[in-house]
Image 1 (cartoon, rainbow, N blue to C red):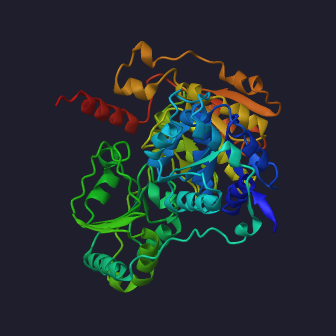
Image 2: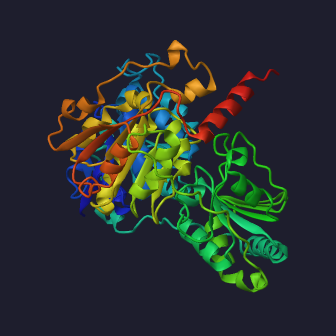
Image 3: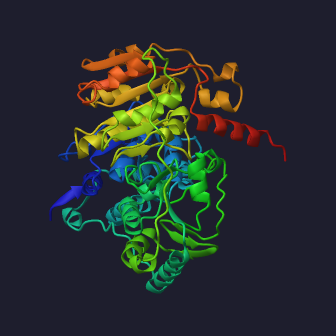
Length: 564
């Protein structure tokens, strides 16, 4: 009977679900497992600079491909990755965390091994990860190894959450039947209860039939749980005004005539705020109602007719329908909604913000101008990654072309996240379409936490655009508290030297500070082709920030200052 090793089985299964790139670092408890990657055509081992960066990169890859795999070693390696893993768990990103753990014999003997706490507890790190994982497994029984690997991969993919899989170092070469690979992992969603689903649909359709001014609001999980297509079809079928949240940006087509803008509670434009809050029915798809995603919880709907579509439940007004998945509900709603909206008269959507007025080319760059102008540089299909802080708020002022993907970490908000995520997104983009552009916007302060992954981009000849916003320090923190405090300052770097320092040979590194320099660069045909890695240092005033960030900073400062 033909057999494969356990390690080979794991990577073959990952390849079958579209995971072709493995992130992480080597360690003595996973080295034999890493050997198996090279046995499988089309699979590659990245080799990151550190585990935290690797976890961020896996997150960026998973947001484009639907799932990623991070591989670390026991103890020191896995713990270094947990900040990134927690962020993926919080933001519904499917990352499988595979950990090479000490051999079953070493564990049985309770040996005082390196990378342990010295107390014989080999499960302590597994227990830590369990708190930020949808499910976990540590393989100890070869007869159950295949089913456990399959279960972990399925859960990661379907639930879009992090999963922990520990494999003892002595089990990587254990053999199992190759025929187990012939049956694909079932990645389908389980069917909703027909009676409950029928009740949900009837209730939603009744609300729709009575509404005069309904809207659709798309949030983060519309993208994470793969209902962007259904959301777009719902907009087309109903012609209801459609809006997104900051975390939902990119989840619907912003060139669509029924797209109305970004709703962020009190931080919204007056026209968007009025349009959303005056609605008599809100169809909310994939909501993640965090503070920065809602203008510090300042949503103010005038109606209680709110339908929330989630990956594992539906909420209608105050009624909760558990174990209901939104994908099936939305698909059926689209086919049944036409008759109940026969008398609906589409209301106007808020007017688009006017283009930037012409200014002298020598005008210094400022955030409000730059983010609005960015839409003219973007192309259909671009992947735009924005760091927590000025970039994540500023991108809300940019109109995305069709099929543009936005990546930001609004909920978890780990500084430096995008410095790793750009690497993962660039790998994913290369696998899908080598001509697809990946564009990063990161502050000079955030960059200093994860800058090493630029080196990994260069190692793999990836070609992202790296826009570094140089405003001399942690501007978002300065806006919240301590505008002149020493702790919000950073050591200035020579950013234009980073690419050659990391070994780049074919690259472009430029500094721009004026409107004219921005226009000349972004309108250059060669610059618009992702033919090489590019670093663009954008010089900005120290306290300059998007208006929405300034207001958010004031809200956050006020909340933090409140006493019990």
